[in-house]
Length: 157
Image 1 (cartoon, rainbow, N blue to C red):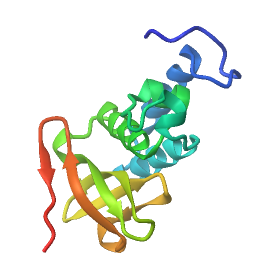
Image 2 (cartoon, helix red, strand yellow):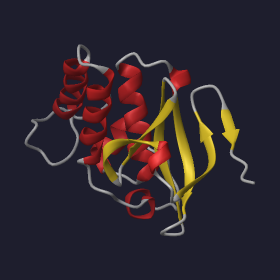
Image 3 (tube, rainbow, N blue to C red):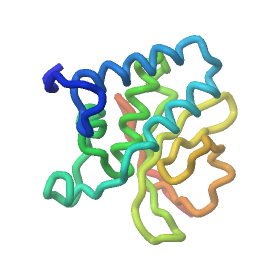
């Protein structure tokens, strides 16, 4: 880990914070999947939303969890951290996708984490505190999605 030493009272990420994230994830291992998803979603959603231009000086930057935990981030950074959290917990990568979509209410692009769960797809979204079925979200139009090994373009009729 190439993060500085420090105590957990510091406002920025250090080894103590990173250790706490991994310890937090380890406390979830024995919980049912629904509780794991809820806890991971809420944990990441506590971070502040910061635009990439303000964080990194570029229009779009996909941060790894260490960067997100240190700098906060925007929607795809929440989704990436949630994906890595679930992978740490042993979730099959084929069940996880980052979905880039159009928020038709706000008319802006957005990104969420989608988790395949039996006959449903659950959405972990930094704009929604609860984990929710994709069927209950009507104002998102998926554009493309990715996981560790594939990508998909979503076509609309």
